[in-house]
Image 1 (tube, rainbow, N blue to C red):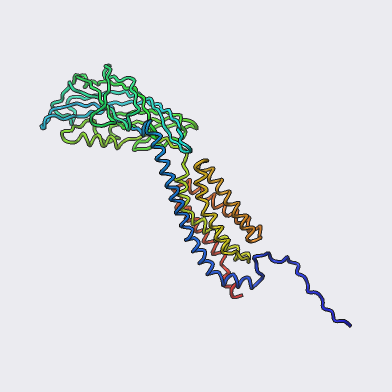
Image 2 (cartoon, rainbow, N blue to C red; image 1 turned 60 degrees about the vertical axis):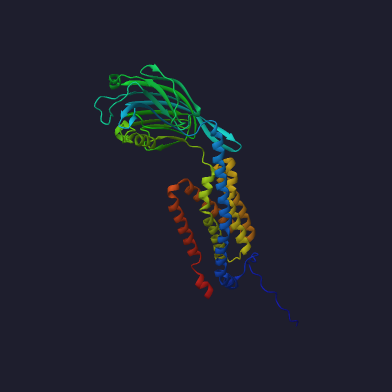
Amino acid sequence: MSDTSAPPPTSPWPAPPRGSLPGSRMVRTLFSRLPLKMAGMALLALVYSLPLALIADVAGDRSRLLDRVREDITASWGGAQVLVGPLLLIPHDSARGKDEAVLLPNVLNVEASLTPQVRYYGMFEAVVYTVDATLRGQFRLQPGTAGVPSGLRWQQLKLRLSAGDLRGIRLETVTVDGQPLSFEPSTRSENTIDADIGAIDPARLAAGVPFEIRLRLNGSESIGFVPAGNQTDIKLTAPWPGPGFYGRFRPVEQRIGDKDFEAHWQVSILSRGFGAMATSADGSREKLLQRLGDSAFGVNLVQPVTPYRGVDRMLKYGLLIIGCTFALYLAFEIAGRTIIHPIQYALSGAAMALFPLLLLAVGEHLGFAPAYAAASALIVIQTSLYTWRATLRPVFAALFGAAIAALFAYLYVLLQAESLSLLGGSLALFVILSALMYATRNIGRRESA
């Protein structure tokens, strides 16, 4: 009788894939290395801080280059404009010989139509515009008005107008009390022009002297006004879809369409907070002009968001993305009983560190939103395929891709809602920590098993 041994029974379960270990040996191996692996992840995160900092420097350099290019584009056209005036200058006698008083208009109505255009230099762009404006109103100075100096010289009056950059100004008509005037450059400032009015009867000024100025002015980036009148009324229209209102006074009426906007401001002497007349004799004129300039308001011609600010804010979340990648891999090792090599951790982290650079490079050509979608899609596909080949678990790859895609989508929302970034980032860290706590809840029991 021959002694034959039966073949060992075959297991109905498939053999574990490469990179995994069976049973308790896997658990002991994993958890004996866990402290060392977590220390390695922390070290890798610190190492990746260097490329993130270098990318931040690149983004800063590109942003400064954009600013220089915009300055070059607008240098021959005209800079940001703020219309100041018109003001009435009245010389008067004083204890030191001769001084000058300034009188603001009693009423100032401005109707302005702005025509913007985008100019390009390579892949960079800048917004320039031409504004056609009509300034109407009246000067009025009644006898007995507080603050009026004595010894006013009614035969030597001047009209003054200022702007941010007068290189591109063209005056069509200028009249005061029906008489045409001619402006000349002022000796006091390159951005100020004066016109000699001559003599005005004080009685006529007490009743109100009308004026009208029609002008065309070239500028860029923004257009502003000051509440020069005791009652200021300004209407502005432009075929531009994204106005950004700035200044102390907001429009009382506004309409913003898909392709244009209209804005209407009304400011009274009470709301602007300062009077209508001052003199150089006591220094009040300089204070008045300073307060007038500080009260400017208007519109920034907001361009589509450049990628540089978005990339700068995205870099603040760089270590968070890398940390989430490491946390997912660690969770796969703990929950899925698989081993992921430190080099695979490092390469996946490097891919996440590359994301801001991709976002910057693509964003300069496509804009921030399309670049964000393209760069995040590339990184998600790349790292998901790599996770699949590293773990040989399609489920892990799918979970990894879904989690990273959700993280990118969540961060995009945070980047758009700047006021919620602190809250959103804190909640993200809380969720990640909670997930890690859940994944490691059985570490002690598994080690003792």
